[in-house]
Image 1 (cartoon, rainbow over the protein chains, first blue to last red):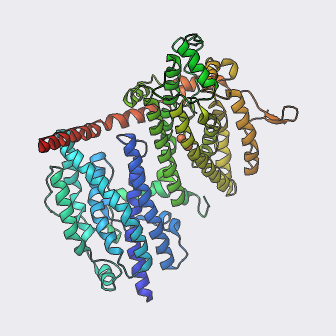
Image 2 (cartoon, rainbow over the protein chains, first blue to last red):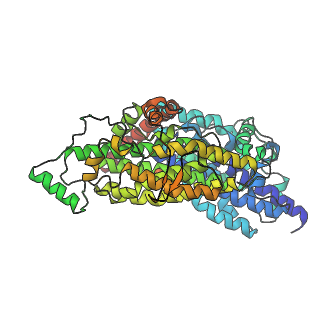
Amino acid sequence: MTDIAKDQLFEYLLRLGDSSLILGQRLSEWCGHGPELEEDIALINIALDLIGQARSLLTYAGEVEGRGRDEDGLAFLRDGTDYRNLLLVEQPNQDFAYTIARQFLFDAFHLEQQRALMGSRDETLAAIAGKSVKEVTYHLRHSSEWLVRLGDGTPLSHGKMQTALDDLWMYSGEMFEMDALEAALAEAGVAPDRAALRPAWEARVAAVIEEATLQRPDDGWMQSGGLRGRHSEHLGHILAEMQHLQRAHPGAQW
Amino acid sequence: MYTQGLDVKPGDKAIPLESGTSEAEQGFQGRIDRDDRIEPKDWMPEGYRKTLIRQISQHAHSEVVGMLPEGNWITRAPSLRRKAVLLAKVQDEAGHGLYLYSAAETLGVSRAELVEQLLSGKAKYSSIFNYPTTTWADIGAIGWLVDGAAIMNQIPLCRCSYGPYARAMIRICKEESFHQRQGYEIMLALSRGSDAQKAMAQDALDRWWWPSLMMFGPSDKDSPHSAQSMRWGIKRISNDDLRQKFVDVTVPQAEYLGLKMPDPDLAWNEARGHYDFGAIDWEELKQVISGNGPCNKSRMKARRDAHAEGAWVREAALAHAEKRRARALKKAG
Ligand SMILES: [Fe+2]
Ligand SMILES: [Fe+2]
């Protein structure tokens, strides 16, 4: 692999790892505050999977980069402009309906993405995806079931679920946006074409939304920028909290 | 563990001391004396049932409230590995809460009733969780000392006369000892770290040591129901004996960390073969148990808020399950 391809792979690994990390971080805010004990356990489970994925991906990113940065160097010592996560995953938990809507939209994409990555010509990436697929299959089942429960449940839960879906919909487009970097990686057989993941996502999302007796929001203007380091105001707060010990005690071992 | 028994005031008749003479009572006591396990369908004295419900539910509530002080540091854990380990730990505690509520339910009380007792302030939980976690070292100190004290208290409960409780404790103890090791490992990293990290570790020990000793409950002479609990095989070792055991095990661990115990009276007593330690501030324990600890109000508020904010979610899940059942019936019919 040429040096340029290394940079490209590094950048792509950040896109993958950062989305898992930030969503895992968001979910762990629920810990101890879930609507029932079983759900605390489930949300922690998902957070744990996502943080595990982030660790594998960021560790690999550090190796590919070859500048001595490990998973913690990348997670705790990068500023927001260097983060490459999707805007969707940094959106606040708000309430359980928003948390489920965010999770469902992401999971349905994440599963297709990880399935496709199992066929990556990059063997490490393919192996990480192989493990993730099993986890994400469970995540999607969990978020789909809740989407249906809340959509079909009571008039109150139906309304909350629809509002959350409507409000977060504008972050769904970014998941399928291609750029020159990923076009090159797709060409090389390392990463899937995001646009190609869309039909399966659309079908899944439509089916679950229908079962939930909800309305699929219209595709209006889509927000974009996370994959290029242009974030919402939320990311800075997430990082301030997450990184504070590493920043306050430079070089310390924990 | 986490059942300090302090909510039972001396002279409280809520749980009668029983020395029954009926055939059933004598048969029951005979089984206890033979070390048989009592199972949910077996006959049991009312006092035994009530004592167990109180103890198991206090224990369950403690596991659940205990998620809060540790959950406070998940988003700020200093490395991804520590974050994952802490998440897994807090998840275990939620699981402990679930097994214990289930064990309590075998005694004919519902989880909803028990949760209601916690939220209304009627039921107690361990005083230890009413102290704040102000630095990362507190996560180490909780694992090392609080989980350590919990294990000390819980290992004898694995032989508790009530089968479902004993079996829950066996499962829980395995996980608690893992928590204890993880906590000690955090303390070890800090005590081998920078001056600031060492100071953080010492400060955490200073704040958590005495409250950890209080976790074993009042001294034997002030523990009104210990004798009955011992006779029923619910309690096997007295509060003071467990506390002494904990001190004896923990002091060398602190020495290995290079930390100083916040007790000027702490000294090895050759004649007794134990460490002597200073007087516990029972007034502090009394105050924390009765609601005046630094975090009692915020812990309870967090639990009440979670319950209230989750109500519409639980209602929706029930309503959906109902609709599904009705649709399935209609299809079948
Ligand atoms: Fe526990
Ligand atoms: Fe524990």
